[in-house]
Image (spheres, rainbow, N blue to C red):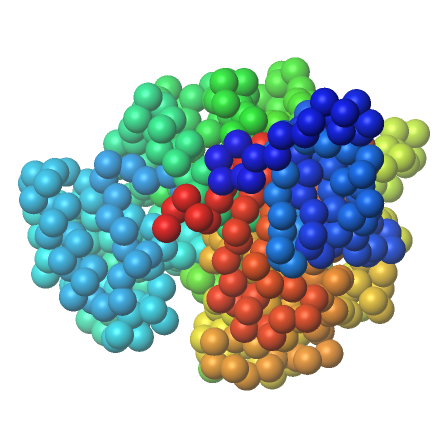
Length: 573
């Protein structure tokens, strides 16, 4: 095992002690069990933990691989309950790393020279807050760099994108084009499209040739391995589908709502093939399934829970009930600050949403719909409540449904949270949004909604709601989410709603054990206890006592999946 100290036990020692494969000791072991017990050693045999305790375990067990933690922290690997795999395509530029408009334009020119005129240029992850100009990219910026290549660059969060003039022309979008369903085309002072399309940019996206799985498979593996460096040992893939092939390789064209440039990754079929080949070297995945319509869902032979401990089916999710704040078009119960009459947009009528929930529920699927604004959360919870009542009346109510609302960014009225508590509806939330989207929240939210954005303490402690954490790629690193959950600070250093903060132990549990519970795997992973999978990470600091900035800027030293070392920072230096 690369990077581990080799300890060979003599014959007499081996006979006196039970043999194991791996021992980690001389550190602080955060078990995250029900008592949040702290130990100093863990013993692993195969892919399972066989013992957790003190240094005395070294007298009971021997192993070929022994890691001296030297005071570092060992804890369960993070379980991110909402990620979009983001493999790099040949047409992509690294726009997420850009810090100025000039840098974006330089990337575009370089890619145009590499690809040639007329070829599409794409990219994901730009944020106006990261650019020196502190403004959105517009089509004029793109045109100035590459007038002869169509361009679509998706903003971080995927709720808006910017296209250049050639891309808009190819998509048939001009000053007279009506807004797409659930979306909005921005216009400049002269009435012409400025290139920004919020939420529903499928008219442009569907024109972009998507590479096949032969190209995207190695890129997907590279991305999957990259999140191991962040300490993520399991994640919920929010880009999943029941299609045979990823987009561009025989599957359907991207639709009007919600598919972004991250969509050229895995389908359930491709994920199972990939993990059968190399799953022991990758983070475990639970795959959300985008609702494919009643007929296709009924014809699909599996439902939530199907699979194994490497890849399995999760909830019907990422069917967006509203937009997001990176648009922004999240659906609120009150006007956006400074925008009288504008409250964002819902994407379904009550009847449409109810049909989807009812159909999925009868077919045995867990529900985990995207709802960010408080109005969207109210609509979603009402639909869940109605469906659960119908199942109960028919004698088909599952004993343990574990439905959840995905995002839960703007805290809804008390009555809605009371309904959630009664129906045992849970929350998958991204506390890092508070940090990453601070500027946007400050611009568009009233004081109360700003203070209670991405609230944790009130839903959990006042209403008893169950919450698990994730990131939604904004940014991916779980340590940023822990920082935001315990400090309620954005990059400005301002505290937004201190009363919504939770303790470090609570935040860690929400990013580990609670994520396992969301997929019915609490007996398999999420804590460091005998019998569970040895999915573990090593931190060079104590997350319970280190300054908060250590979390914000912290790195992971080692990551283990099933007891195998799959990331070691010392090998990347």
